[in-house]
Amino acid sequence: MIKLKNLVKTYKMGSTTVKALDGINLEVADGTFITIMGRSGSGKTTLLNMIGCLDRPDNGTIIIDGADITKLPRRQLSKIRREKIGFIFQQHNLIDTLTALENVMLPLRYVRVPKKKAKALALKLLIQVGLQSRINHLPKQLSGGEQQRVAIARALVNKPVAILGDEPTGSIDTETAQAIVALMRKLSKKNNQTFIVVTHDPIIAAASDLVVKMIDGKLYQEDSNINILGKEDKLII
Amino acid sequence: MEVIRNIGKRKFRTLLTIFGITIGVFSLVVMGGMAEKMNKLVLGATRYLENTIIISYQGSDVMFGMTILPSHLARAIEKVPGVQLVTKEITVPFEEEEDVVTFGMHASINGISIDEYYQGLKYMDPELALSFVQGTWWTNGTRDVAVLGSDLARRLKLQVGDKLKNWGKELTVVGILNQTMTGPDNMMFIDIQDAREMLLKAQPLLTHLVMEDLVNSMAAIAKPEEADRVAKQIMAETPEVKAIPPGKIMAEVKNGMIVFNLIIVASALIALVVGGLSVINTMLMSVTERIREIGIKKALGARDIDILGEYILEASLIGVIAGIIGVGCGALFCLMLNRLLVTTGTTIFLLTPRLVIGAVLFAFLISVFAGLWPAYRAVKIDPIKALRNE
Image (cartoon, rainbow over all chains, first blue to last red; front, side):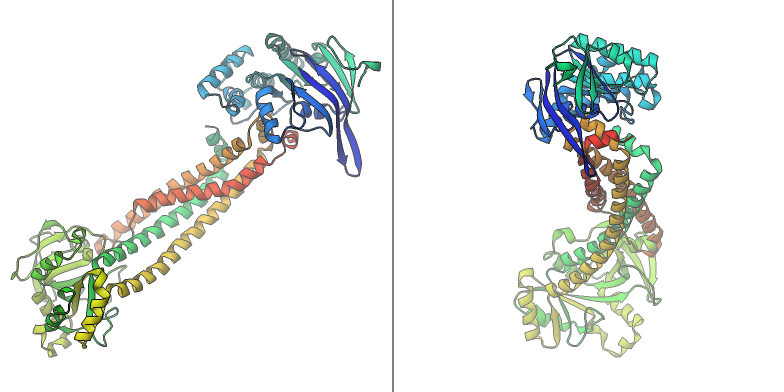
């Protein structure tokens, strides 16, 4: 379960103060696939960074898996990222000097899983995403779709509570994007893992349990079949 | 593997950095090899002289020229309490031609009394006793024979049984010494009477003196801890001589060596530090180029120590590779030059395990040190900014 309570984040841009997050409230149950849509600069990535323990809110609370992470020191946030969060980025997602297998093994290195066990776990996931024949290839030898599959495998390998995707289909063609979304959806259901995906892609939105819109740092409900806090005028407050 | 792939990513840049460190290590090995050889010579002399009080005539300068002493003085000195033995030698330059330029010690002819040599062994560290590759010492009373130091024998291509002519005398080689890497390697030992005759050939002016009783090198052997006192007492009881205790001689030699070592090692260190700076430059560029990668790793939960370790490992690998190449090239250079100079009986370089290991270790440490700042910068990168970097 992920709970966001009244999240506020402001940035200074020269003499102007920009409110990137303006009182965000959201509760996402385990195994939910949620899409956050919105224009560039609406605050989507800022929100994702907060949930991913990469940034801190000015106000409000973030609860991941029952623990309030808002006031945790930097080292503890890094631990949460290692153990409870998986990331899928838009592009240049993989470490280019590591093979597909080594890229997937990387998060396990940080949680000190023995190499042999890590290799077995990574291999299993690469088979699940259909890349068993490409495990020893470097990222530059893989297509965009294959690279994103490796990124998905890497995001899942340490069995995180939440997988955060920032435009995961942004740099691939429609057909590949559909396959990637279907894969994420399947894994979300199979492993009961929460996917929070920031995107402009309607293919992802169409496959989601919930689509929310972000406008000027506020979250609006677009469609729902899960519990969302405060539904007044479809503005999630 | 990842580290190797990372440093191989920018091959030319990495090679240049490795080359920079290699030059530094090469200089350290070559200069250090020279210093090690000199140190070995001095150490050998220090150990040999630790119980030796050098006797010279009042007014002479034993450090910078020959002295002439009547050997009957030895009998007076032997009576001084604490003196265990007085040794007498006649030293003649080996080269008949003047102005032979050499690095290290000139070859010399050392005329000794074989009886005295055996007596001296009782007071000498057994490790310092000379040993033979071929043959042995002559027996008392045998004349016209020679024992050669290893470098001298190699230079002259002489074996036991061969003959050589020097200062008008024909000598038969009866022994060749093992290499000591110190003074005796360039010495020819002969009977003191033969040396006396050769000295007269070498320095004809001496024929005006009554040579039967003269020697040009004399030393009193005493316990090291008593040497200072004994030297003072020798001078008090035989006012015509000057007795220099081992401590004073060694202090002068060691002072000279400290300056020599400092100049040599400092010049090599400067080269290495310049190499270290190129490691800093390479690693800083590597951090700048891999900002997004660092961001991804941090997002995946990499600890500070993981990032720090990765960059330091890269820097240290550069150092170790350069260290090994530098030591290899330096050792090859030293061995080749030593081989080339065999014919002159000179060994300039001495490669010791501490020099070889020390040079690689130093290259490693300087690279680790050089990698610290770039690695620290990598640790301090904000993952959010790094992930925005395309």
